[in-house]
Length: 222
Image (tube, rainbow, N blue to C red):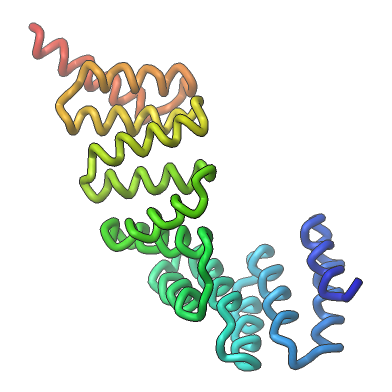
């Protein structure tokens, strides 16, 4: 087993000091191989040592100009620090250099969403949802993005997709309720808020929405 493989195994087992030593050994033995620098940088991001991680990613990119994994790693690093504009650029670079999986589409979509650009985020989250139909988080975030983009009917249906994967997803019920309120169906919305609260009693958003809808119905019905 190479020092690189050892380092990855140590990292997976949360043996971070041993992982760092193995990655360091690999870099000393293979100073021209960018893969060692990328893996060490990934470890540093996990440890929230962002400045050092950035240096290692950039060193990898000095050794080899086209390295989608380095751009993806930098994107994650910036995303963790809420530097979403820089994260966006790195994920875009990773895609331009050939990275084509649900993770990069999802992270690019989330970076744009965090910059309040739901319409730009939408195609990337849609693609992530197509590539990973069983991933509950991806499916849920795609549904939220549809809602943020005022595609209310589509968002409602997407929350049903989430519930087909996890019937105890309280946030999906809550968001179905919000969609129904937008569609001026308060009685049906109330049912969804109650379902969310049955699963998660302390769901503050659903609790507040339930009170508001009950008050609305009371005033309307006199």
